[in-house]
Image (cartoon, rainbow, N blue to C red; front, side):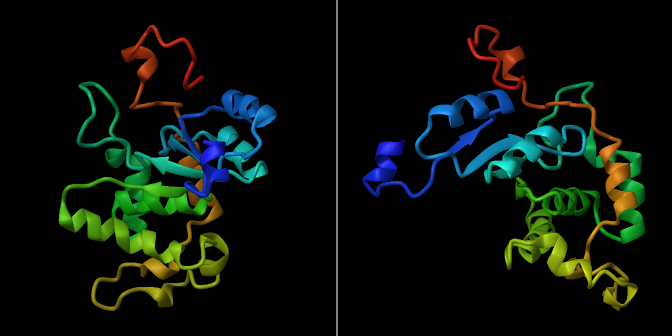
Length: 198
């Protein structure tokens, strides 16, 4: 990949599902460090240590499955979008739990990839996603705008440009971390020689 960058065929190198151990190893010999690490992040799998490590190394974290995997979860798995704490916070904000999860990820400094096949859900997800893309500094740009005057008159919902979660809300969501992965290749491909997620 570094040769492709040297030749101008690739602008940036990215990795996926790299835990701190693999990133640290890679950075010990890589001439060109990765620009992004795409990993599963949602309120039940927050990966705070990985997020901090990437931030300290100037590696962008791109969160996939920020809503859990509501359409593809196995029997008996938890449902992020039905979590009572998330529902309570979202209801108080008059937004959906999906929007709350996206805002939470963005506020933690992640870039977010939310999947949906429902047009209404795509629009809803985009409503909160576009706000942070304007300047890439979600928390600081909108922190001063998070007042009750920023509610939509017709619905009473908080406008997406004003939505910044409080420290208390962030702590309540932090308490939900279970280290739960919906994508578990170590279970599916037991012969994998590298502990991909550990």
